[in-house]
Length: 156
Image 1 (cartoon, rainbow, N blue to C red):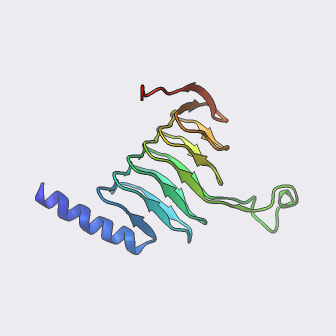
Image 2 (cartoon, rainbow, N blue to C red):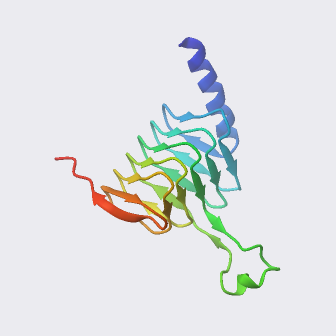
């Protein structure tokens, strides 16, 4: 256990030197988590990012407390059809927008969160879902594009 804590401390120090801002008890898989781009990634306390996740941060990404990104998740803050040479740029100009993920969010395996999305607190994003719009608090979404499948009631 002691060696595990030392390894995690060194790993988190390395991540902090590479544009990550980490809260307490953040777990980032050492197997294939990648960050691309010049934006910062802010992880609040108790965040878990699993294997083969890809975070493309041309703008900042904010991940709230107690949130988990499952295997092979993709968060991207930019969309660009290869400007300036592609004619599609006239219709779809390059886009760079932050992503905000609330507290207590579970992003399922293979899910994708696109630029500018704000995910509310206490949300579940099903495996393989593609989120391209903001989500309110306390919902479960699934599908491509992601649609609300049910409200989550925590009996408060």
